[in-house]
Length: 285
Image (cartoon, rainbow, N blue to C red; front, side, top):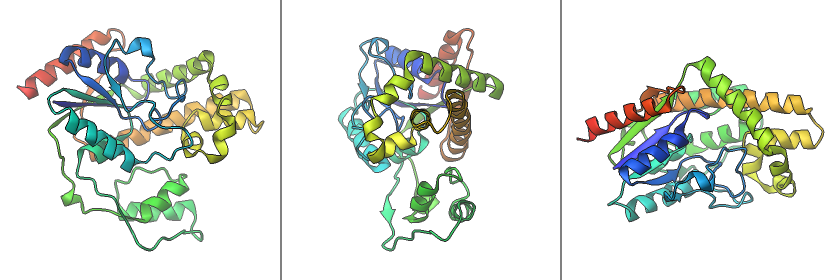
């Protein structure tokens, strides 16, 4: 059985994954693009060793920050784990929807022979072209590099994209005001836990690390360390970028994957766990 737990940051995915792994004697597989990297702990809210409860956790801490670990790399690694553990229950957990779809669907990567740099187009024009190519394209308008890569990729026709494995998709959600409050508090907690010191250890690598320059929390703190913004501006920017990322996550999940959503009971998370377990029991027979 394959179970996928998705949702925005701060909604309880990690806690649910532990509960389900204990119940179904499962293996947890990371589906967060930034938790792939070694040392990116506080800023990615990576699970701590003492929280794993002796449950196997795979695809965490497998790449150096100077490595360009791609969605294609994830596809290969995740499918290898699936093939090697056909007799076990696997629980994917994380918020990177594209990685999940690449692993579990017949997602094909084909590069066009001719590359365009689109240097004469604005971000708005690139975004419009990308939406014309795929109206459900989840890339943010200001992410110029990703938009260009997307425009240079040959997409497989939608009718050819189908799931490769029977999978149960669980989504955790909450009202927007509650979710945003939790995101804000999480950011504040990261600073209390030592996010600035964590980012300082990576200062020599920013020039050659796509991951560090992409990861929310790390790029903003680096700007603060360079003196480009104040500490308050840094924290506010991380909160804002995290909220915007949550919106993009919802857009992808709702349009690309067959998610069944559960409203989280933060006052008693066991109620949410029980609701999800009952749902899994019902549909898995």
